[in-house]
Amino acid sequence: MDNKNKKYDGANWNELEDQFTQFFYEQNLSQFWRPEDISLQSDLNVWNVLSEEIKLAYSKNLLVLTFLDTYQGDIGMPVVSRSIDDKFHQRKAVLNFMAAMENAVHAKSYSNIFMTFLNNDEINDLFVWGETSPILQKIVDLIVRYYRDLDVMNHEKKYETNVDETKFAEVQWKAMVASVFLETWLFYSGFYYPLYYYGQGKLMQAGEIINLILRDESIHGLYIGRLAQDIFEGFTETKKTELEAWMHNLLDKLYEQQGLLTAEIYDPVDLTHDVKIFNRYNCNKALMNLGFDAKFPYEEVNPVVLNGLNTETKTMDNFSMKGNGYQKMKSESLKDEDFIFDEE
Ligand SMILES: [Fe+2]
Ligand SMILES: [Fe+2]
View 1 (cartoon, protein in one colour):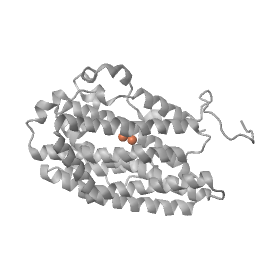
View 2 (cartoon, rainbow, N blue to C red; view 1 turned 45 degrees about the vertical axis):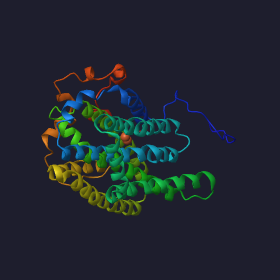
View 3 (cartoon, protein in one colour; view 1 turned 30 degrees about the horizontal axis):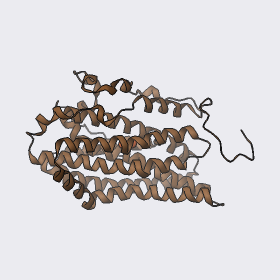
View 4 (cartoon, rainbow, N blue to C red; view 1 turned 135 degrees about the horizontal axis):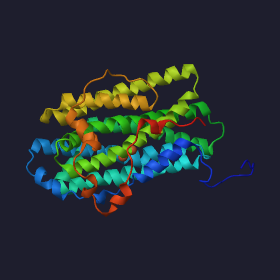
């Protein structure tokens, strides 16, 4: 293996890089699904009788999710994957698999929902709203800028000598923080509304799609959070303090923008207060994925939404709603003990 002339090597899956990557590999592949596995037609009966305010809030949330998933797939996951040391081919494979899900499956699913619920003019108006919303643009920018920084560093590391390893690790860690903030926190203001309906037994097929997506996002945030924690451990105490302050600064900026976006979307349906609680709840989870303490005190999340989140409480047979692909979706829910790995 330590051949000095070695320039390229192949992924050897006969030798595991580490236990947690193997676990996430298995979990990701067992969770694989396709947007067309779920037919949305039966939701139309409910959709058609909803008020315009509700339809607009629902659609705008899915549009926000579309934008976030688009950039997570186009740049976020790929640059994080490329930043991983060349010797970790399996880690890269897991990240590449996640990258493929973001846009090709998640963003595509939102488009399928739009196609079923809305006409072409409404879809176009919705995308124009997102493209011209200063708040949404700002949120995407606050995340994507750290992906771009890492993209530049990846290039420098590949083609230039004397790249400062600590600087590289710092930029890499920051991109991972942005990624976990997006996966485990920012998505959830958008998930709230579909879950709110799903928890009441309404718009079940769209809610099913959201549940499949958030099941994916949940392991994405855990995996990148784990990689980020390993990098963070390598920093000096001074650097750790500096980086933690940077992280809280980014958090504050995102929290402010997410609050504004939540008010814009949810004020017309009187749910802003509840959604903001859910935002804080998920922000705490993102911090914990990154190895930090929760920032916000415990608050009770709307039980209807928790009901929408918890697939085990459903009385219906979830699998019967899915198409031919359902065999691929047999997958166990994660438990806390799944995340105890032997030290390498
Ligand atoms: Fe995604
Ligand atoms: Fe994701």
